[in-house]
Length: 61
Image 1 (cartoon, rainbow, N blue to C red):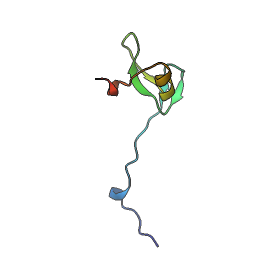
Image 2: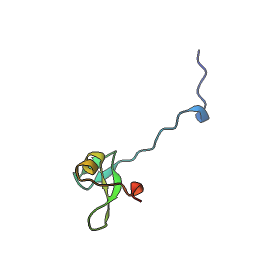
Image 3: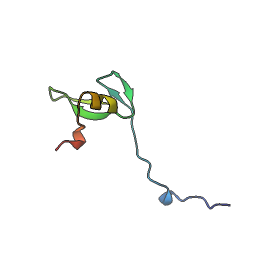
Protein backbone atom coordinates (compact mmCIF):
# COMPACT_ATOMS: atom_id res chain seq x y z
CA UNK A 1 0.00 0.00 0.00
CA UNK A 2 1.48 3.42 -0.97
CA UNK A 3 2.37 5.87 1.73
CA UNK A 4 0.32 9.09 1.91
CA UNK A 5 1.88 12.13 0.28
CA UNK A 6 2.96 14.78 2.76
CA UNK A 7 1.88 18.39 2.07
CA UNK A 8 5.46 19.52 1.33
CA UNK A 9 5.76 16.75 -1.31
CA UNK A 10 2.63 17.70 -3.23
CA UNK A 11 3.18 19.46 -6.54
CA UNK A 12 2.38 23.16 -6.55
CA UNK A 13 -1.07 23.85 -7.92
CA UNK A 14 -1.33 27.25 -9.57
CA UNK A 15 -4.03 29.40 -8.08
CA UNK A 16 -6.47 30.67 -10.61
CA UNK A 17 -9.31 33.03 -10.19
CA UNK A 18 -12.38 33.87 -12.15
CA UNK A 19 -12.78 37.41 -13.40
CA UNK A 20 -15.10 39.32 -15.70
CA UNK A 21 -13.74 39.73 -19.24
CA UNK A 22 -14.63 43.27 -20.28
CA UNK A 23 -14.32 42.41 -23.97
CA UNK A 24 -16.69 39.47 -24.37
CA UNK A 25 -18.62 40.36 -21.18
CA UNK A 26 -18.60 37.02 -19.39
CA UNK A 27 -16.66 35.34 -16.60
CA UNK A 28 -13.44 33.54 -17.46
CA UNK A 29 -10.78 31.65 -15.54
CA UNK A 30 -8.13 32.90 -18.00
CA UNK A 31 -8.82 36.62 -17.50
CA UNK A 32 -5.81 38.79 -16.66
CA UNK A 33 -5.55 42.55 -16.05
CA UNK A 34 -4.75 44.62 -19.15
CA UNK A 35 -4.94 48.32 -19.99
CA UNK A 36 -7.39 49.54 -22.60
CA UNK A 37 -6.71 52.44 -24.99
CA UNK A 38 -7.70 55.02 -22.36
CA UNK A 39 -5.33 53.47 -19.80
CA UNK A 40 -8.07 51.92 -17.68
CA UNK A 41 -7.25 48.61 -16.00
CA UNK A 42 -9.70 45.92 -17.11
CA UNK A 43 -9.64 42.14 -17.34
CA UNK A 44 -9.43 40.25 -20.63
CA UNK A 45 -9.55 36.49 -21.19
CA UNK A 46 -6.96 34.59 -23.23
CA UNK A 47 -8.96 34.48 -26.46
CA UNK A 48 -9.83 38.20 -26.26
CA UNK A 49 -6.20 39.09 -25.53
CA UNK A 50 -5.23 37.27 -28.73
CA UNK A 51 -8.09 38.68 -30.80
CA UNK A 52 -7.52 42.29 -29.71
CA UNK A 53 -3.71 42.10 -29.33
CA UNK A 54 -3.81 42.93 -25.60
CA UNK A 55 -0.79 42.40 -23.36
CA UNK A 56 -1.30 41.55 -19.67
CA UNK A 57 -0.01 44.28 -17.35
CA UNK A 58 2.39 41.80 -15.73
CA UNK A 59 4.04 41.11 -19.11
CA UNK A 60 4.54 44.77 -20.04
CA UNK A 61 8.02 46.30 -19.70
